[in-house]
Image (cartoon, rainbow, N blue to C red; front, side, top):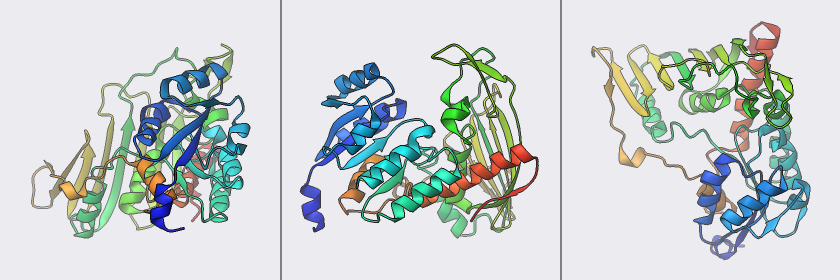
Length: 350
């Protein structure tokens, strides 16, 4: 079937897990596209499923995600659950011949991500996409251009500081991000920021990590029972990059009154810094960093839903983010988790 004919066909989508990001971004983004129909939804509870269905005009509610995925009324599945269901739903959807848009983080661990990638590669006619890291979309192309033009010279070091800007909350409930049973080996926003590093300067060869849990038990929000917390609330990672540079990533949820997110690239001849949602730079002859302008043609906006639908229709291919990239950042997060557990440097799988 040619591209024009495919573009005229309606695409019917089922949603498994309509969490915050799905309700605020994916559903509105999909509904804004012509020829896209949201036909079904399944959340953890029937009540929340019906609430989402009523809010967005979704006609069918399922009690079990397995039934939604197997139903003949959809061609594509959007997965907005926590990571614990990303692999099972993805594998079931691909086996049923359906396209998949999976929320970040890709999976619980690298083993699951590798299975998802293999399943996607076995069905090359199906689109398999992971929701990308959004924080630097508007500066990515400018950073890549400047690096290519030699702005930095030889890259020597990368420094990532991702903080919530809040003090330690000792009495908060157990969120899914702190719950290993729901989040797996993902640690805070580690994988999200590593995806940015991959876009700019490439991948890590090995990692050495140290982390700390300050509140070792938190109440389950459903049962109220205490659950052990093993996912760090403060993390430092030293990584040797494959290009010869060294990277330091500090991810924290306990550092109050500090800038939330900064990424700095240090070169032999220049420095680039992403901070406060803007890009700064300076060369050897400068005395300080200055704010850099972003060319209009280099600004990339959020268009995940459009890219997904266009890929299904054969208009474009997925670039942000394909399953191969998602599996590579899961390889990194897995290596960090292993380093934490074993107290040693760990190689990152290629």
